[in-house]
Length: 208
Image 1 (cartoon, rainbow, N blue to C red):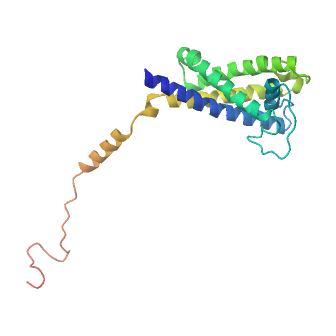
Image 2 (cartoon, rainbow, N blue to C red; image 1 turned 90 degrees about the vertical axis):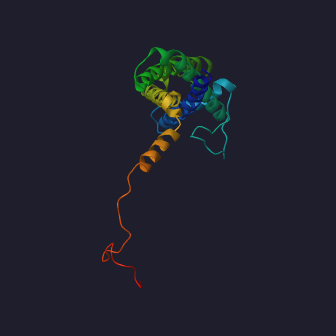
Image 3 (cartoon, helix red, strand yellow; image 1 turned 180 degrees about the vertical axis):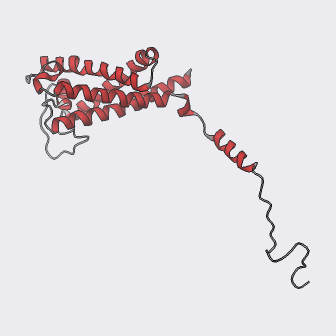
């Protein structure tokens, strides 16, 4: 039981981190390329800090750190991803007994609702810049960007989680190695003579 809990905690941590990175790279990349006017990381960090200002000369991490709200948004995204993976482990994985990608689509759908309704709804209510539900006020393609990024998060996070919690991920490979060594040891050696080809078994040694 303890081992299962540890596997789940590690799976949640790694899956959340991998999924969050993919989500941020995609949604911030969409913002940088003009596909959406929603600067997700900046908006999230500003919502938490209450204000933000531009910082010049600061290196970017994943293209999201460029203002004082940047790191806050990054950490908040990682925490939110962890919460979503925890919900996945408690509710989705035990009840949606299908392939990992089916579970990933379900998690992606949940993430879409969280980002589109909760995040965008709070941002629209608290910030001066209108966002609208599913980011409709940030550009016509913003809902599609949110959906694609959320599905990517769900698939990547679920795949990492499913691999890590599976028994095969933790199996010791020593048994397989021992079996391979035993199989090699059981091979019969070839019957080869160390004598020269021109010498027969009855020919005496040189100089005899």
